[in-house]
Image (cartoon, rainbow, N blue to C red; front, side, top):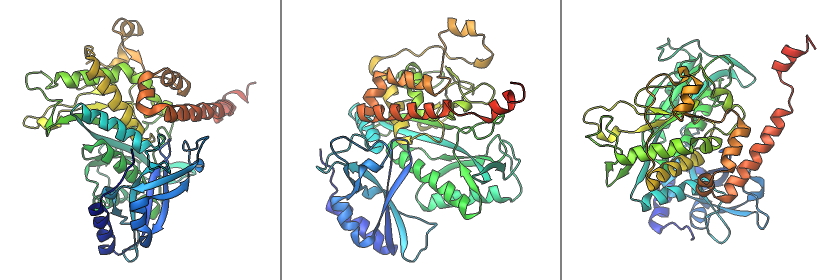
Length: 446
């Protein structure tokens, strides 16, 4: 089915561009791995781009190449027009996210934004709107060549006015100018580690916002002569960076995760959604944690989840239910704690939604919560209670995803096969490397 914009939408964007003295427009999209790609056009070409799209060679983009065709069309989404605050105000620069189409005007099956849109539409057919609120953790370093921190702060530290504090402040202000509201920002547990929590919104808007936020964090850091990284585990012995993702389903303006009679205020729909996530968690991990380095974070002792369990308060579990606040029925939600901020948010939100909807469709029962520290439970007891383990490394994650009918359905053959192929190559490159650990451990004695 062809994607088109109506004349009113096009005229509104042209008006905004004129009012803001926009000269250049960056058309953004991502490859399958979540790398931000873009095409720059002048404002004179904007109307034609909104009407017909902009052609480009898809064979040069990871996951976009096809045997039968390489020509692709980037069609800007009018609702995503924003002026970039860090660029000059005169002859300003704006950005728009694009849907990727075939030359015939049909959605391209390898477009991550389309993958999420397709899963969101399935939820809509069931009567649901999927809302998410991610918490992005990241590190500031002096540059990209070494992990030299900018501060020695710890969790929630209010450090004196230093560079890291100013960076976070400027980032929040810049995001606000771009229409991306920030709920919280604070120092995280490790030195020079910080967190920005984005305000709840629908999944597609949020995926666009995550991509923008990652760029803004890096841009602001560069402006101040620093470097920001979303690498999941940049420093051995310290906490890694996660992207805990809060979520709920709404229907007719009401949060259908809420049920007043339940002790945890969780509805049957919420429990089935969470049960779906737990049942398919091992299969989803390749998408939520896609890099070799992602699995250096998912180890005991650093607050990251390893076991497939849930609890109402316990922060050692994969799924946590934040405490209910009286009068805040709209805030009842669950938190999935495995994803890291280096994932592709479009694909990550898509598989999380697919797993949850599967739980609702099949009426999966929610297993008992694990309120004690799951890391302190013996292996024998975990087996008796049916508590599974997340993949320990990239090959395990590849194996689970490759055997998953749910992930295949959520992502489609094209995206899943391309992702699997890319990740097998990544692991092959990694496993043939001789690391510093091996040199320090073996060279002096062997």
